[in-house]
Length: 265
Ligand SMILES: [Fe+2]
Ligand SMILES: [Fe+2]
Image (tube, rainbow, N blue to C red; front, top):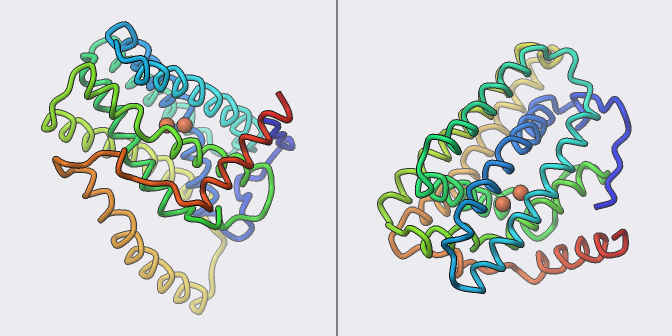
């Protein structure tokens, strides 16, 4: 993808929104560790896949995830993060976890982890992007996230199919999937908290604080209704990402980013 980032992107790159900016940076820092781990897991399953459709989904998945983390690494390197020296040890901790999972955990665990992550992102993308794209100023950063999110929707069935095809088992997928969601969201929360401690938001007036608290309450209610409830549905035995549709507006967005990629290839 032709995304070019200027050098020295401010860590508060969404104006006046340190919490949101740090949240997006934390997510972007996660991906160059998590996505290579997903690719390793899927590749380890490749020889056990006999269905040509599942196999072509697996190869497409690895290609898409490989592009995602490379672009995120480029963005991460362009961010000015020298005021956050503690990030290095948090990143090392994450890297060690994923290396340990690959070398010490079973293929079944790693495939169930991958599906736990993908089920989460599928719902997250619907929740924060919807039909209108991201509510961020237009820039290569916004485009990077929209492109990534839309491709997450495109490959929403792949890890589910590979898990079912190679190992299978509802309860195991449920337990490890929930663990996966706890594992990476815990890391994101830790990074977020650290960044807010290391570089706190500017002092806000009582009126600004009150407004933010009200916005926070409304955002939490919205998240329960539109993120938590759909996520809980993925825990049910009859759940399948094959039953989840992409809206025409989201398909248009996917087509726009595909056209952007082919123009520059
Ligand atoms: Fe991805
Ligand atoms: Fe993905």
